[in-house]
Image (tube, rainbow, N blue to C red; front, side, top):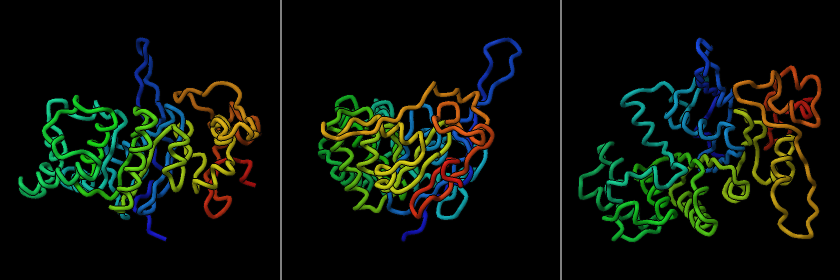
Length: 323
């Protein structure tokens, strides 16, 4: 088994929300709350959850666009949160991000060639001639033509723009790529093409992906392992096939029961949660799902369950399995 290339240990990120009334104290929003996991070299870890559960904040903390409030991020066993200047620049060369919106993440005033070349200029890689050659190679890698090099982002479709973003991310030969809902803004037919591109590039360059999405079928297709997030916590983590076949946490069961059946003859068990999602500004004392869970016990309202192994490739944060 390969070594973990990235470790996240007890990571938390909070934001101060100003009060709307005069002299009202600012409230603390816990976007990511004591999250721990590791990513193996060459694998895809899917991160699933509803909007607002902290997936994107987690991704931005890993890439150092947000400074974590507490906890550690280790890349090749070296702590990377808190790094500055040239040290941070070196890490960012190895850990890249692909954003959700393929248009707003591209500079509309620059040509595609200039956009892809820019990271290489910032990191002083190659001569101008070598960089131009690399840009042409990257365009071919992501399925675009060489004559696209002098065109502007507005001249491309959504799928093509996301391919440009992928080419830019690959320009520095990264080891880890954080994919923040990279296909959610695309048509379904284009989604499949871009997902296949991700898979092919992973095989060719031995890339490691952290693939953030709320689309369960997309994550099932591309992920080796899956982390389920709810209100800033990872509540289930494990092998993709195991979790889809036999989800353990009540929230995961409810999430997967919402997927339409693959066949009209399939008898799918319905599992529903009662009530509304609590506000991240006012979380329950114990388990974040305690206000909605049909299996809620007294201990669930008092203590936060820890992520514990129930078998070799499956971890769950639920008191139902802590006995």
